[in-house]
Length: 238
Image (cartoon, rainbow, N blue to C red):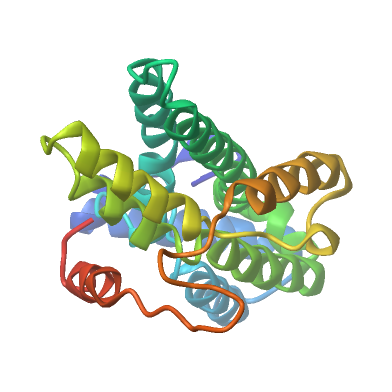
Protein backbone atom coordinates (compact mmCIF):
# COMPACT_ATOMS: atom_id res chain seq x y z
CA UNK A 1 0.00 0.00 0.00
CA UNK A 2 1.29 3.45 -0.83
CA UNK A 3 0.01 7.01 -0.59
CA UNK A 4 1.83 10.30 -0.73
CA UNK A 5 5.16 8.51 -0.90
CA UNK A 6 4.51 6.45 2.25
CA UNK A 7 4.52 2.68 1.88
CA UNK A 8 3.39 -0.18 4.07
CA UNK A 9 4.11 -3.88 3.71
CA UNK A 10 2.05 -6.77 5.03
CA UNK A 11 4.91 -7.73 7.33
CA UNK A 12 4.81 -4.30 9.02
CA UNK A 13 1.18 -4.81 9.98
CA UNK A 14 2.24 -7.42 12.55
CA UNK A 15 3.85 -4.74 14.73
CA UNK A 16 2.30 -1.95 16.79
CA UNK A 17 4.39 0.62 14.92
CA UNK A 18 3.24 -0.81 11.61
CA UNK A 19 -0.40 -0.60 12.67
CA UNK A 20 0.04 3.05 13.68
CA UNK A 21 1.65 3.69 10.31
CA UNK A 22 -1.27 1.96 8.60
CA UNK A 23 -3.78 4.18 10.41
CA UNK A 24 -1.80 7.28 9.38
CA UNK A 25 -1.76 6.15 5.75
CA UNK A 26 -5.49 5.39 5.83
CA UNK A 27 -6.25 8.71 7.47
CA UNK A 28 -4.32 10.49 4.72
CA UNK A 29 -6.22 8.55 2.06
CA UNK A 30 -9.55 9.37 3.71
CA UNK A 31 -8.63 13.05 3.89
CA UNK A 32 -7.62 13.14 0.23
CA UNK A 33 -10.98 11.63 -0.73
CA UNK A 34 -13.01 13.90 1.52
CA UNK A 35 -14.18 10.98 3.66
CA UNK A 36 -13.97 10.27 7.37
CA UNK A 37 -11.88 7.37 8.63
CA UNK A 38 -14.87 5.10 9.33
CA UNK A 39 -16.20 5.45 5.77
CA UNK A 40 -12.81 4.55 4.34
CA UNK A 41 -12.43 1.62 6.72
CA UNK A 42 -15.88 0.30 5.77
CA UNK A 43 -15.15 0.51 2.05
CA UNK A 44 -11.73 -1.11 2.34
CA UNK A 45 -13.37 -3.90 4.32
CA UNK A 46 -15.96 -4.34 1.55
CA UNK A 47 -13.24 -4.41 -1.11
CA UNK A 48 -11.19 -6.90 0.94
CA UNK A 49 -14.16 -9.25 1.18
CA UNK A 50 -14.69 -8.93 -2.57
CA UNK A 51 -11.12 -10.00 -3.41
CA UNK A 52 -10.77 -12.56 -0.60
CA UNK A 53 -11.71 -15.56 -2.80
CA UNK A 54 -8.65 -14.94 -5.00
CA UNK A 55 -6.36 -13.01 -2.65
CA UNK A 56 -3.50 -10.73 -3.68
CA UNK A 57 -0.12 -11.63 -5.15
CA UNK A 58 1.83 -10.24 -2.18
CA UNK A 59 -0.10 -12.10 0.50
CA UNK A 60 2.12 -14.44 2.57
CA UNK A 61 -0.46 -17.26 2.33
CA UNK A 62 -1.16 -18.01 -1.32
CA UNK A 63 -4.88 -18.26 -2.08
CA UNK A 64 -5.92 -21.50 -3.88
CA UNK A 65 -6.82 -19.68 -7.14
CA UNK A 66 -3.38 -18.02 -7.18
CA UNK A 67 -1.74 -21.38 -6.56
CA UNK A 68 -3.71 -22.82 -9.46
CA UNK A 69 -2.72 -19.97 -11.79
CA UNK A 70 0.93 -20.54 -10.91
CA UNK A 71 0.58 -24.21 -11.81
CA UNK A 72 -0.86 -23.62 -15.29
CA UNK A 73 2.18 -22.26 -17.13
CA UNK A 74 4.62 -24.98 -15.99
CA UNK A 75 1.90 -27.57 -16.58
CA UNK A 76 1.64 -26.44 -20.19
CA UNK A 77 5.41 -26.75 -20.53
CA UNK A 78 5.22 -30.28 -19.13
CA UNK A 79 2.69 -31.24 -21.79
CA UNK A 80 4.91 -29.84 -24.54
CA UNK A 81 7.93 -31.77 -23.29
CA UNK A 82 5.92 -34.96 -22.92
CA UNK A 83 4.61 -34.62 -26.46
CA UNK A 84 8.16 -34.44 -27.82
CA UNK A 85 8.67 -38.01 -26.61
CA UNK A 86 5.87 -39.45 -28.74
CA UNK A 87 6.88 -41.48 -31.79
CA UNK A 88 5.52 -41.03 -35.31
CA UNK A 89 2.94 -43.76 -34.73
CA UNK A 90 1.62 -41.96 -31.65
CA UNK A 91 0.42 -38.78 -33.31
CA UNK A 92 -2.77 -38.77 -31.25
CA UNK A 93 -0.77 -38.55 -28.02
CA UNK A 94 1.35 -35.73 -29.41
CA UNK A 95 -1.77 -33.87 -30.55
CA UNK A 96 -3.39 -34.29 -27.12
CA UNK A 97 -0.26 -32.94 -25.43
CA UNK A 98 -0.13 -29.88 -27.70
CA UNK A 99 -3.82 -29.12 -27.27
CA UNK A 100 -3.59 -29.44 -23.48
CA UNK A 101 -0.55 -27.15 -23.54
CA UNK A 102 -2.41 -24.58 -25.64
CA UNK A 103 -5.36 -24.57 -23.24
CA UNK A 104 -2.99 -24.18 -20.28
CA UNK A 105 -1.16 -21.30 -21.90
CA UNK A 106 -4.27 -19.34 -22.85
CA UNK A 107 -6.01 -19.95 -19.54
CA UNK A 108 -2.88 -18.87 -17.66
CA UNK A 109 -2.57 -15.73 -19.79
CA UNK A 110 -6.21 -14.72 -19.31
CA UNK A 111 -6.28 -15.56 -15.59
CA UNK A 112 -3.03 -13.64 -15.05
CA UNK A 113 -4.49 -10.55 -16.71
CA UNK A 114 -7.50 -10.60 -14.39
CA UNK A 115 -5.36 -11.29 -11.31
CA UNK A 116 -3.04 -8.40 -12.24
CA UNK A 117 -6.03 -6.03 -12.49
CA UNK A 118 -6.94 -6.95 -8.91
CA UNK A 119 -3.36 -6.47 -7.70
CA UNK A 120 -3.06 -3.04 -9.34
CA UNK A 121 -6.16 -1.85 -7.52
CA UNK A 122 -4.66 -3.04 -4.23
CA UNK A 123 -1.40 -1.19 -4.84
CA UNK A 124 -3.13 2.08 -5.76
CA UNK A 125 -5.81 2.45 -3.07
CA UNK A 126 -6.32 6.21 -3.49
CA UNK A 127 -6.99 5.92 -7.21
CA UNK A 128 -9.11 2.80 -6.79
CA UNK A 129 -11.25 4.28 -4.03
CA UNK A 130 -11.72 7.63 -5.73
CA UNK A 131 -14.30 6.00 -8.01
CA UNK A 132 -15.69 3.70 -5.35
CA UNK A 133 -18.89 2.51 -7.05
CA UNK A 134 -17.05 1.69 -10.27
CA UNK A 135 -14.19 0.02 -8.41
CA UNK A 136 -16.35 -2.37 -6.41
CA UNK A 137 -18.48 -3.29 -9.45
CA UNK A 138 -15.38 -3.95 -11.52
CA UNK A 139 -13.69 -5.91 -8.74
CA UNK A 140 -16.73 -8.14 -8.19
CA UNK A 141 -16.92 -8.79 -11.93
CA UNK A 142 -13.20 -9.61 -12.28
CA UNK A 143 -13.20 -11.97 -9.28
CA UNK A 144 -16.26 -13.77 -10.63
CA UNK A 145 -14.72 -14.16 -14.09
CA UNK A 146 -11.37 -15.28 -12.70
CA UNK A 147 -12.94 -18.00 -10.56
CA UNK A 148 -15.09 -19.06 -13.50
CA UNK A 149 -12.11 -19.27 -15.86
CA UNK A 150 -10.22 -21.44 -13.36
CA UNK A 151 -13.20 -23.70 -12.64
CA UNK A 152 -12.32 -27.29 -13.53
CA UNK A 153 -8.57 -26.77 -13.79
CA UNK A 154 -7.81 -28.20 -10.35
CA UNK A 155 -9.12 -31.56 -11.56
CA UNK A 156 -7.00 -31.34 -14.72
CA UNK A 157 -3.85 -30.57 -12.73
CA UNK A 158 -4.47 -33.46 -10.36
CA UNK A 159 -5.16 -35.87 -13.23
CA UNK A 160 -1.72 -35.18 -14.65
CA UNK A 161 0.01 -35.06 -11.26
CA UNK A 162 -1.17 -38.58 -10.51
CA UNK A 163 0.35 -39.83 -13.76
CA UNK A 164 3.83 -38.61 -12.80
CA UNK A 165 6.41 -41.39 -12.82
CA UNK A 166 4.03 -43.94 -14.31
CA UNK A 167 4.63 -45.92 -17.53
CA UNK A 168 4.19 -43.87 -20.67
CA UNK A 169 1.15 -45.87 -21.72
CA UNK A 170 -0.61 -44.91 -18.48
CA UNK A 171 0.44 -41.29 -18.93
CA UNK A 172 -1.01 -41.36 -22.43
CA UNK A 173 -4.33 -42.55 -20.97
CA UNK A 174 -4.16 -39.84 -18.29
CA UNK A 175 -3.55 -37.24 -20.97
CA UNK A 176 -6.64 -38.49 -22.80
CA UNK A 177 -8.58 -37.87 -19.58
CA UNK A 178 -7.05 -34.41 -19.36
CA UNK A 179 -8.21 -33.53 -22.87
CA UNK A 180 -11.71 -34.80 -22.13
CA UNK A 181 -11.89 -32.46 -19.12
CA UNK A 182 -10.25 -29.31 -20.46
CA UNK A 183 -12.41 -26.40 -19.21
CA UNK A 184 -13.95 -24.34 -22.01
CA UNK A 185 -14.62 -20.62 -21.69
CA UNK A 186 -17.60 -19.50 -23.83
CA UNK A 187 -16.43 -17.14 -26.58
CA UNK A 188 -18.98 -14.43 -25.81
CA UNK A 189 -17.79 -14.17 -22.22
CA UNK A 190 -14.20 -13.44 -23.22
CA UNK A 191 -12.43 -10.15 -23.97
CA UNK A 192 -12.56 -9.35 -27.69
CA UNK A 193 -8.81 -9.91 -28.00
CA UNK A 194 -9.17 -13.52 -26.77
CA UNK A 195 -12.27 -14.65 -28.66
CA UNK A 196 -10.65 -15.84 -31.90
CA UNK A 197 -7.95 -17.76 -30.05
CA UNK A 198 -10.48 -19.57 -27.89
CA UNK A 199 -12.72 -20.34 -30.86
CA UNK A 200 -9.77 -22.08 -32.51
CA UNK A 201 -8.98 -24.02 -29.34
CA UNK A 202 -12.56 -25.19 -28.91
CA UNK A 203 -12.78 -26.27 -32.56
CA UNK A 204 -9.56 -28.26 -32.19
CA UNK A 205 -10.89 -29.85 -28.99
CA UNK A 206 -14.09 -30.96 -30.70
CA UNK A 207 -12.08 -32.68 -33.43
CA UNK A 208 -9.83 -34.52 -30.98
CA UNK A 209 -12.35 -35.75 -28.42
CA UNK A 210 -13.33 -39.34 -29.11
CA UNK A 211 -16.07 -41.45 -27.50
CA UNK A 212 -15.21 -43.55 -24.49
CA UNK A 213 -14.62 -47.18 -25.44
CA UNK A 214 -17.95 -48.99 -25.58
CA UNK A 215 -19.98 -45.94 -26.58
CA UNK A 216 -21.95 -46.15 -29.78
CA UNK A 217 -25.12 -45.08 -31.47
CA UNK A 218 -27.19 -47.70 -29.64
CA UNK A 219 -25.32 -47.92 -26.33
CA UNK A 220 -24.34 -45.66 -23.48
CA UNK A 221 -20.84 -46.41 -22.30
CA UNK A 222 -20.02 -45.91 -18.61
CA UNK A 223 -16.32 -45.90 -17.78
CA UNK A 224 -16.38 -46.89 -14.09
CA UNK A 225 -12.59 -46.87 -13.74
CA UNK A 226 -12.58 -43.30 -15.02
CA UNK A 227 -15.32 -42.29 -12.58
CA UNK A 228 -13.36 -43.79 -9.67
CA UNK A 229 -10.19 -41.96 -10.71
CA UNK A 230 -12.04 -38.65 -10.70
CA UNK A 231 -13.57 -39.40 -7.31
CA UNK A 232 -10.13 -40.08 -5.81
CA UNK A 233 -8.90 -36.74 -7.06
CA UNK A 234 -11.23 -34.78 -4.79
CA UNK A 235 -9.08 -35.32 -1.72
CA UNK A 236 -5.71 -35.00 -3.44
CA UNK A 237 -3.62 -31.90 -2.63
CA UNK A 238 -2.96 -29.38 -5.38
